[in-house]
Length: 290
Image: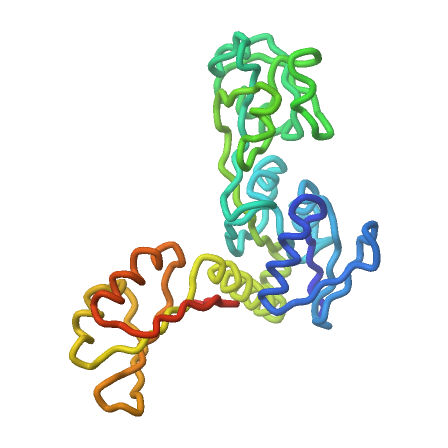
């Protein structure tokens, strides 16, 4: 069994390879122009391809599965199985937004102001549906990226994806409306999903990728606690997860260990120390599978 998988080439490529590495899959490319990376799993056949095209190739069964954005699934209106949702992008762990943007000092302040205007975008079909839904008549032209530089000399507004908004601000553009909030999706075609072997392999990959992504925001926390302080410590720890408690050589003390969100440790660690915990150690995780 070979599972043909589309890996997004471009801005998501390195972050996707890094996520797969944490999940236990090592991808390598022979050069920056290689479209056929190698992987240390004989059941996987990867192909690097633009994320815009992955939904079409998965739907048409040229690829079994692929990683692409919800934005491109919607733009293509692809009839695929969305196996898993992974919130990561090229620079952060945040979703991206597909937005309508226009000059800060221009006269486009709402979608209604697009009437009769020109819009440049990579999301032609998504933008045209947005205009139809809002009963707006405007001209939409395809752009091979770098839409920001076309405003206002070539077009009046653009529809682009943004992660932080920094590029829009740098070009003196404002966000007028949000068309879609998008995250990375693992998708499969219906035939591959109906194949027991391919489905099982796909579900395994999804589980491991999700575990690797969970590990980005969770850490392990361990400490030594005197038995008389256990109840006080348990009241401080997150209520949903009970810690692992192990005996120590000193019968009056135990070792306590728990997985928590990394951002909570800055408040949690001082409180635990004051409640009697000793030898607190925070450590990173590779995968967290719930």
